[in-house]
Image (spheres, helix red, strand yellow):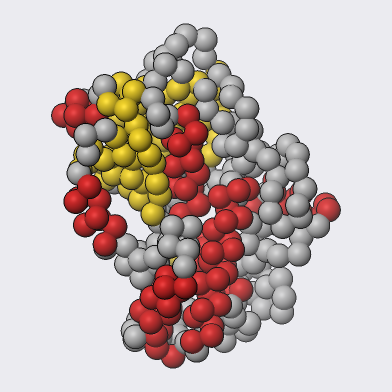
Length: 319
């Protein structure tokens, strides 16, 4: 499932290339024909991400709410950004390798190209095309088209047209997102919520009503970076540790948005950084490393199911 950084990147695509334009909407698949008719011919005013949900604002108090879920994706084509730049920990800038085999990749910042760009859990460039607009491929639930850019939505868990009151109701169910709720109040709310619950911290981090945007990868990595046992009840996690979790999530989320990758290991330089950018196996502390030795202590990383998803952790460093 796409995690928070991917949805923020999708929102940025819309802000850069669709906002301010009149949009023609259609449903090539036919399952969202009524919703597309409501949006077609309206000007897009804004696009914002809150956690794993996307809210796109149109004229006349029309909003599109999308949750990609496990199988959803946006395909962009035309005048969209497809070349990543290097930002963040090293301060270096320049073209970087595209990791098409990983949970995400580096393909949504930079110069326009006439290719299809898929943005979901993974980002990848697909076939080039010559005719405009390109033909929809597969079961496209919703197509948003301007004079020089197109976005095709396929396989979402949720896709609906709502008004501003509906947006408020949807957002009220979501926990704070560090890139949306930037003040001290958000950190305080997260801390109070976690420390009021007996629920294991490994479940709380995946609860979108507690904190927005964290999925399976970030959960495992945040817990390891904090040296927290996933089974520790929230109310037993020290306050400073909970606050440090929030600040670390804010840091990793910003890196993910700018780099287009869930880069969760600190201190990478030179060849190690290049390998991490190009290969997921060199990017994470524990995620998908079951049976392999911990990078710190050598104990084998274990895997278990928690909350219906695989959880990876070190039984020594996170004891």
